[in-house]
Image 1 (tube, rainbow, N blue to C red):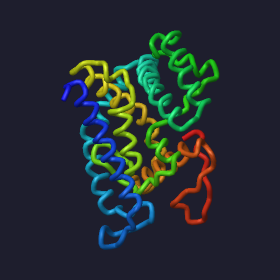
Image 2: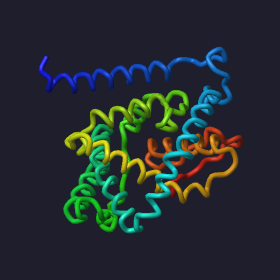
Image 3: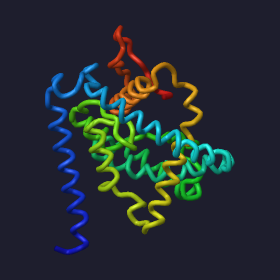
Image 4: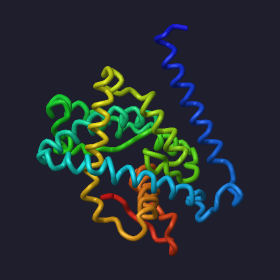
Length: 255
């Protein structure tokens, strides 16, 4: 087989395997024999908490100190420029998934943002598109699967990757390996250096938000993740909190 075709075919095969696994897991009923179920949305809480503790250990002893150092040496304008640069690269993913969801307006916004920021924003270092009243509309393949009715499946805390579920994990792998990305054209090791800077930049931007954490951290992160994902899949419409005891609804416009 042609070497140029082998890698794309392997990636597509991996994607379909992940998609099938996600669909099967989402469709299977859960029983106490599998894992002590605490809630319908989080039947594997016991295991998820162990993984969460592992991730917290790595974050406390490695990622967070690196992010704190990054914030200490990076001026605010430079930090914002790095964030804008990576956000601009994400517009390609937003565009592809908007098209897959038949969202014409969102596709136009994503294309416009990428064009404006790339041309007039110094390759995306400056977010001029927002000033032109074109705010970002995040879209990913997990949202695309949800848009077409794929069940999310159980809440999962993934090692290193954080909160997810079978549908969103499959979507993330698809966005990473299949969706067009400028990273696909950057040779190693620069590709990995760039992705590492992106991870550290995202973690550094989350440090101020830590002050909002209250109560049990695992529960807070789980609820915020599930509500955020429903918010995105429903395009900002009001969604019900699956862990609310009184059925209150929550709006996440500014989450």
